[in-house]
Length: 310
Image 1: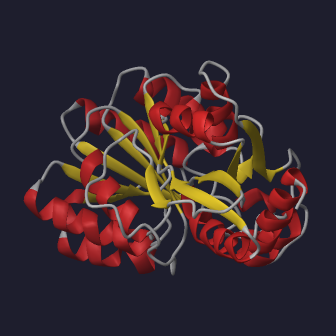
Image 2 (image 1 turned 180 degrees about the vertical axis):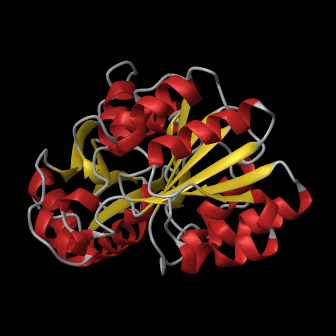
Image 3 (image 1 turned 180 degrees about the horizontal axis):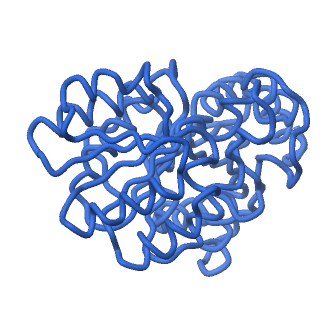
């Protein structure tokens, strides 16, 4: 996913000299093609994410289209005040790239987890929150936000994610995308996810279908603004809506869905699947930590079946 975004930025930057990329002294293996191709549109701000964000805001207010880049929680939580005061308040055209949403850097411990970032960033006025589910969503989203005014948070996985959303042809901010229709079975649910947990969610839907539970699956690459139309429609057609996120369930994607559901008509009951408001103190790979907190495919299946009683 990250490689796809950088390749996309190189192509965009060749055509638009106002596109700038700033790194917080990270990602050199991935970013090298960018600075070799566009050296005058690249800055290494050093291990100083707060300063990086202030520099990005200044460039944006002078007409540049700026992308900042770092891993985990560093380009977000470490410089939340600068994003709020320097970028969002001025509606500056700064796009914050976080590589490693969730437990991607699980082997480096809790300090490198990004599990509260969606909640923090979506609480800031005038900040758009984009969490692509696969490389294709990431590519198309980057093309759009590069030419969209205002401050945007782009939350990525790391690399190696498979393309799941084959149906997407055009990315629209605020739109959810249907991944699959629910088959004609007695038990039907709607299942929503955001971010790189999309692949695990799709695997879970495959398992559920084999066990007689049909899931209508949606990817929500935009968390803010959220697709109220899809949520409202599913609330009327299904008894249960499940949300899946690699993030704390407090204030995150599931909370954004809940905010819409409480104001719309429908019979659906919402159940949020994510990190249940705790810090994971274990160290291991992303897949290992997902399993530990129950957001791998099997964990998602178990939680769905536990709710609907199958």
